[in-house]
Length: 271
Image (cartoon, rainbow, N blue to C red; front, side):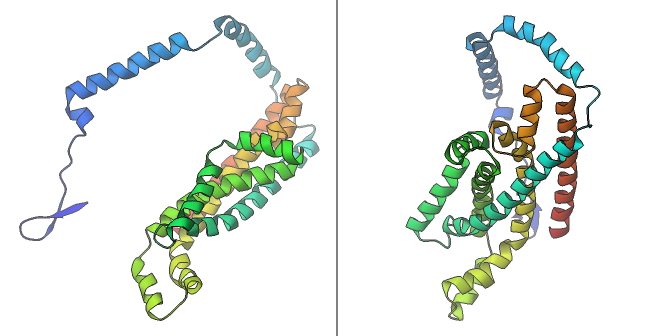
């Protein structure tokens, strides 16, 4: 931020310490509260230290059984990964498309109050629950398989992308909107020619990020029966097939690394 000096030229604003840093009473008081909470939490939470000590050798056996990773059933691994990729792509496409109208509804500067409240309510509800909880509900509703995963990640995408797009719409250059309205353009034409072009780079970047996020989440929701590589991973652990499970984990890590690199490259080109 810049401030103007006496001559009218902009000058940098002087940085000041936040109160909890500058004030020793607040600083040490905050530290005391944090220490007290940590002591209280460890003293009151029901940790079963005996079971934890028994679990350490079990964890060592699991990790030891995972080496070397077993890629002999690569066809099964490829099938699970392909299903996860399809789930992530479909959920991202549906979620991004559906998030646009909800983002318009949830932008206070272009939506009337009742519509704004409805759009915000939909976004808040879709963001209120972890994808695993939503996946459990959809698995109970539509059964095991990729449909539950697609519905789960679509709802998850609407909440995330819709919220950020609504905030982006609220920060657009209002002059373009007023120029369109001065020519007699209707509401939809104003959205198409004055609002959407301003948020397009942000929308593409968010779409790439959401695809990357859905790839990770597809493995997680698959553990509860929503299809994809997560189901394959859960079955491997259920059969104590740790070397194959470790191979699946390595593939998931590799795919996420590639997806992260591609999405980062695309965002740099756009922004």
